[in-house]
Image 1 (cartoon, helix red, strand yellow):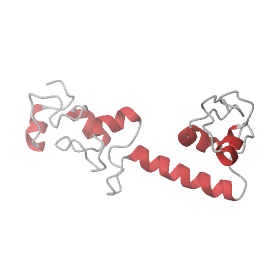
Image 2 (spheres, one colour; image 1 turned 90 degrees about the horizontal axis):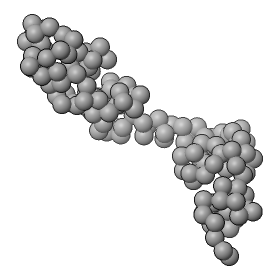
Image 3 (cartoon, helix red, strand yellow; image 1 turned 90 degrees about the vertical axis):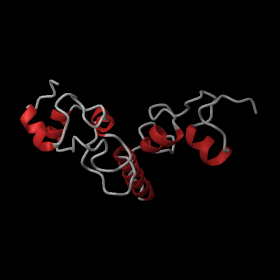
Length: 142
């Protein structure tokens, strides 16, 4: 099956020597072994994301913590928590100085962290979010 492991080893592991990807997770059996993943389990760390999808996303298929939350979401939550702590003590990076941290702009408000006024309406993104309660991504007529 050209998955990088011998038929003899596949027989001892219980993988199918006629299938490159025994568990159908998008990652051939040989690559799974190299990553330390289980070639018989499509989600080796049981975080809700297949081993193949984790590798494609740059995550570790063996880093699940048992929460059932995908690695990328755990990383985002961790980054958001760190950002909130930094914002509370005034150290959160805010490249454009609009009053919204770069992490919040990138992942939550989906505004441009390098532009104080994403929708070019004359109000800063920070003022729109915190004061006017308008969408800083949409130019509106008031």
